[in-house]
Length: 556
Image 1 (cartoon, rainbow, N blue to C red):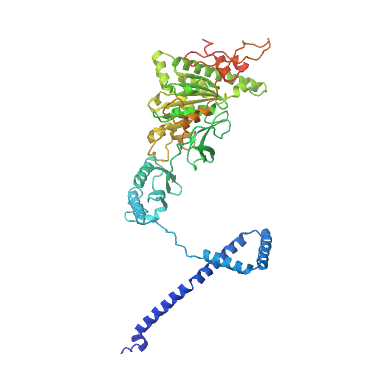
Image 2 (cartoon, one colour; image 1 turned 60 degrees about the horizontal axis):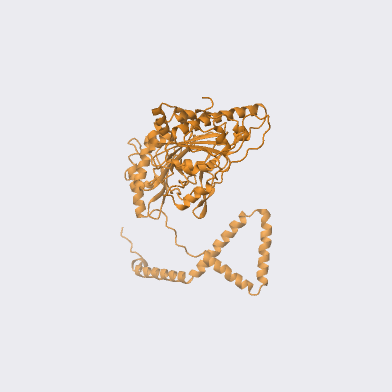
């Protein structure tokens, strides 16, 4: 069959059709340019109408009547004002033009360098998140990385700050070794010099990696907003605790997230153990705790290192003793054990008689012992009792007697801690540089963060009982007598130190029926000799009931 020839308009008029299309397109572009202001205003009016309708729908029915009346009153006022309608029309057109203006769309998705970084990270995870038996692997060489990386955020330098990874269900996320390999790989590939936190969601098979900001090191010692029985150990990440306190950071006042340690009769972690390297900040932590405890309690300090770090506290009101020698430490700790027993007996008698506990046993007593291993070594060399043995009664029964024990030791002497100390110090802190194995050995659980690139003094981790492991930065509390201390930090510590009770007060008159000799308060000597209980108690607070206690060495 012969083919029919094409119509003339289709065979010879293609050039004219093309030319007509170009003319129509040019006319449309010209019309768009001419009508662009009108299009912008119409788009803005539509957006304003949609926004007004949404607000009207969201308004409760009982409030629609007053709003409608207010709108009608405004329209009437505009209509009565000279040139009011014209000004209102100009205002509406201007608002519509601003609302309907063309905006530059925000860039979505990563750029080329960020895409290359994500793909490289995806390829590095393939050997760990894939297996040959998987028919449809989520991680495969040359695969689609966007299916595995649900969300990601980059900083201005193009480095990852947050990444959420979906991994296959057969990955052994319950094994610490497998999780450690993934965390180490992500830390290496995402860039060193930063601190990362890893959140594993085993139920949803997701891993969230977040870059953490450095904890502030400029917060100095000060009066923190805390209730009686609460001690601020330091500060941590804002999303780790549900509480903030106002603190002075230089000349400004900011809200910081504190790590609050609760002591007293209802505390589940009544005693604290801090471990660190030399210069890690354990002495700073004890000094900070001492300044807070002196607000409403008495303090006994035993400096096993003998470096004089607590000389500024000697003779202060509320500081019963500051000992650095073996003899003075043993006598002071022996008195503390007798004082704990006395408090327990007094509290028991008060409960049996139906009376409230006396004030002298309700005032907290803090026993702060820095580096007990040194004193234990000296005691073993001289054939004397280890000072840690004197802490058995305060550690076991201190919660009921309002007695709190805080110990600080270094990693090299950690094996010398007694079993009683290990069992009863459920609040733990690790300060200074430490490996994940050392942190887990002390806290009972490893941190979910990578080691910080720089470890300032007082930087570490803390765990209260069976709670989570938190990052910790102890407030700057240096020795004010140290020449290397800055003037601001020195003055901050000096402002918190209580006064010295140098004056000897005359005891009140007593009846002849009172038992025991009257004792006047005298300052506590800083010598390494046995300290009578009368002198210790009288300096902290004149009290006849405490003055009747027996000296530490009375039984011998």
